Length: 117
Length: 123
Image 1 (spheres, each protein chain N blue to C red):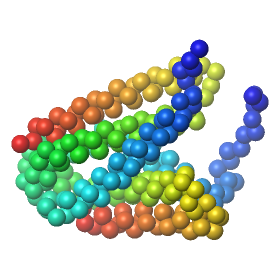
Image 2: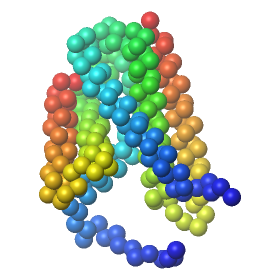
Image 3: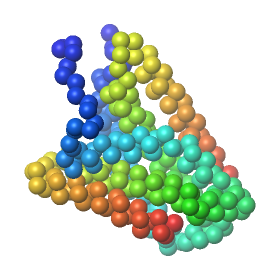
């Protein structure tokens, strides 16, 4: 039977988390330079940063990578520390709750970005 | 598998090498940032929603408590970034020799603090 808990899908998760890390490590300096060049001193300029479609798409991809990266990291922490005889169900509940919350954050971020002119 | 493994968690007696500190701080900052995600999205939303909300966020980020929290988030993010890059290089087999690993650990630690202070002044 497929085991649902614990570190039995470690390698794919490990790889995905590092892929997400690379996406973020690419986006952050790029965005910093973009914001530096375009300027973000006041509200209008800050809003204008996220208005072009490439900025919206790039930022949403960054947030998706961040949420996936964070979920895998928290999964690792739960696997390491949430240990007891009946903790499998606790761990699964934590992971499920976190996944639902993060999916909510992703939709929320999309709404924030696409509500800008 | 052995049922009861040796257990030692006397935090006052454990002496971590610098690489151990970078690693445990990488985990702690990661956990902290993960839990802060909804708050950060909320602040980001406020900063974009209206001129008035943007001004509120700006004023709060410039206040004493706000700038402390801002520095904490910046340091957490940057330490996590630099320690993470170091771990990626270690995964690739680069810098595993002890003196080199200690140097890169100190570098990651210092870079996180320095970049946080620099960005904290700019933002």
